[in-house]
Length: 416
Ligand code: ARG
Ligand code: ZN
Image (cartoon, rainbow, N blue to C red):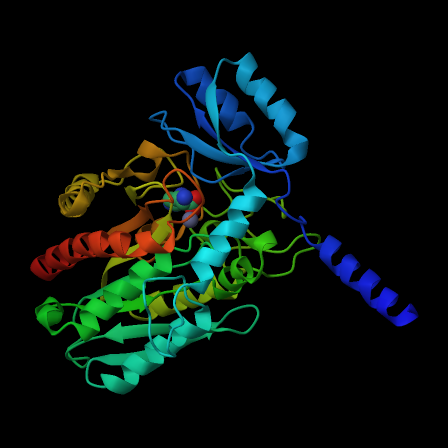
């Protein structure tokens, strides 16, 4: 029995070396700030280690979802009560919900290699296999480029879609999956790829522009969030720090890096990393965009959740001088999405809606790479429960969002 015991102890040690062990006893609270001092109270506890803000805190006093570990629940509830902040328990048993969600979200129908179903959340390998298949089947329209490797060695495959790649047309660059747990983002990118490549009726969209799409910026984090229930809400990359793993890739870009709304504490969800572009994944995005930056007219990055279309700046409250045009285009996109099934997006600069968060890819694209049109799209969440929509909701989300993406396409095609 000695050997199995040694193995067990070893496995336990490995498990406990992780940042947390499971979601046993965790609860998600939906908190409703309704006055200015409520917001202040919540801002003060943003970096508390017992809390994980699932949806961002907003100036407009929108409700915010917070996952709270068992240790934090009594002080958290007391704080809310003492400040007369309304709340409800959104998820009473996070562990159970995650278990249910997983069997449902990952299993889905069995899929064939090289196919994306939009009926389940696919693995990074399945996503890359789909891109490979497109390159093989549509050699005139598609070319792939591995723009780098992730920390754990996964290929960052970018797909370029063009009817004439020698023409040097304006480029729309879009990425997704920079935050691991935001599972709905990669399918939205994949649906755009599918429509642009496989739906002949859309070929005219490519008359004036090319699309370059990286569907999973942070595959290590994405896969980690899929491997077992304990890791479902992983957000960061998986690089090794002194005591904790992972950097918030969306705080790691070199434009006002490490300023407001990012953390220098390694173990926090908004850790900006030891230096700008410390992460291979953000470096790869940077290097690729800089290589073709004169052609990139629109930068889009897909996140969840919150139904928002955001433009710079994210690091400060001032607006860029061309904010009116950014707002007009954002509004038009929101309207295209709303017309499908009534989903209402808020449109504005990051800091007109949210608290500042410096080091984001959107700010870098505009301020660092000089791309005039730069937007973060915060897709819908899971409604009443969970982080991402259940598999049956993937199709409604990707199809309505596609209408918005076409509006982006039309605007860029007309303008350049
Ligand atoms: N929820 C996103 C994040 O925290 C919002 C990003 C908006 N852009 C920004 N530069 N803060 O990463
Ligand atoms: Zn995000």
